[in-house]
Image (cartoon, one colour):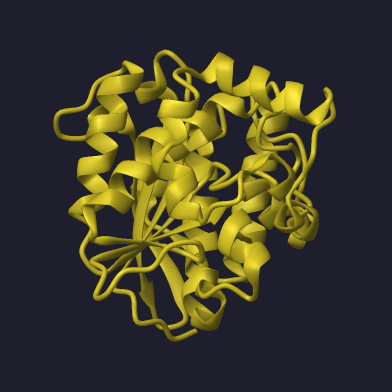
Length: 269
């Protein structure tokens, strides 16, 4: 697989109180038709970072702005279903996001009120068979902090392309929405791999071994971390990087197919 990107990054993102512990970042590069992941680490280890949510968010934004020539897969929804959007383009939607909803709870409550308690999925969610709607109880904090505190500020910098909803001339980094669960479903590997004990550990090993045939190669340190980290976050970061690598190999998908993609985004898997 050829790609114009020199660096491939995957981020398993968290909106939890101590998100620096549960947000993990995998960094690699294309190498002779494979994705070579050299490093997987928690966001708490980033320069200027910490275990707290807002320290992590600031450090992650800085890290992404420094990722020259990279494509980055981020594991959170980049948009809401059209049914819950106003008549505006994505940059207008993202720019007003935290003004419209000052916190994650008000965001979820407003979405549920507008949807009548139903959980609408985007077209791209249905295509990728993502597990949850963007404002599901298990995902809404990731959506809120991901859009409002990562994507919106980075879009405003003018240096970042957020595919396929926002483009800039000569971007230094490209961001895409990744879904590790969808990737595992694609390869028939969707199973219980999170948790301590021999059974989840065995599943993590089997997933890594199976995806090696599809091009995922982990350095010895990265492999040890992905196998040992019981929450599955380290492995998910590597899977998010693999999603970004697949997106990089089909650059035509980084542009919107139609208005739906331009406003609802697209899941790469």
